[in-house]
Image 1 (spheres, rainbow, N blue to C red):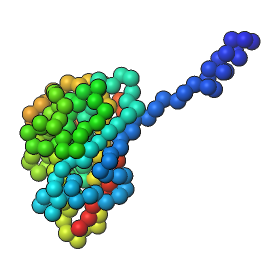
Image 2 (spheres, rainbow, N blue to C red):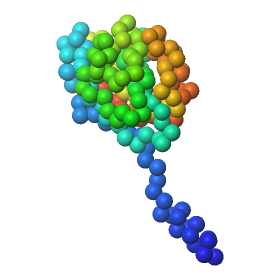
Image 3 (cartoon, helix red, strand yellow):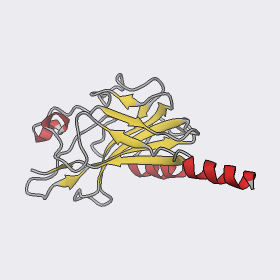
Image 4 (tube, helix red, strand yellow):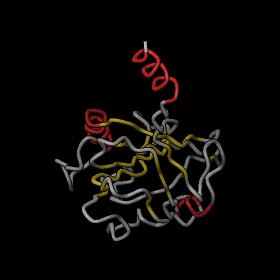
Length: 178
């Protein structure tokens, strides 16, 4: 009887596991992307936003980040940023971390080739007259930090690999139209 009571007490008072969350001081879920994060060809500064996260599963060995526009008038959408090999010890990327050359990325992290043909962050730039596009910022908690195809990371291939190694993900989806 005491064992049953202890089991019931532990079960009802256990703290639920935290979910992986993604936040930013620059962008917000469901709101318009600020000019600083917009691609230069659309009148912005093309600076990657500050991103922070918490609640990673205990088995996380690394993180990845992707930014994807599913509304782009391009078969398969449009990849704006792919970053892999982010250490599990990281809980943020500073504003501007996605600059070309990777100098703002954590040691060992790599940026893949986006649909602009760059290995950097390239911000929103939908065609004029389109309704606002959604920009899916996805942080992936992974069971590995290894990046088997560093230097030749393409959007679809990276996401297929990420889905195989993902143990959690958090999404933030700001919008932008012009």
